[in-house]
Image (cartoon, rainbow, N blue to C red; front, side):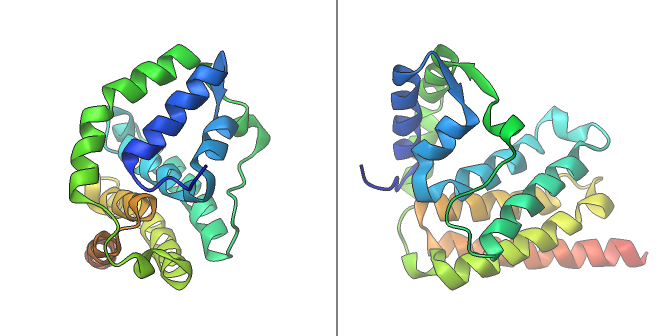
Length: 191
């Protein structure tokens, strides 16, 4: 089975896992994503931060800690993502996973149309480490930027999506967004 190259491929993998098991664990999902597991796992927490859950005091900082854990592994070149056992064992019924993948197909088609294998060399090795360092920097801006919910989450989500679909142009856009977010964070910290 080849490495997933699009959001649609990730949904296909999740759907397959849902057909093979009664319950789908986080470990099952990580295995299905293969070498692209960091992308979805950076994207998901950043998107959660944009929901009403992200407005609960302390949640953005917790999400930032998760992002630092993941990005730190990327920065140090870990090929496979490590998660604590209690996280890997978390599960949900397979039918809910399959329903979710079906509901996300339209969004996946849009994302795959806009974001795809451009400038792929900017989504490999050294560029991944730079992106990881930027994600850690962004996560460190979360406490002062909790009042501005998309300030750090949007660039982190963009990095996650760029890694997932191997889109170097999106990686560049994420880097620019990161620099703006860090600048805003520093400006707010000084005032």
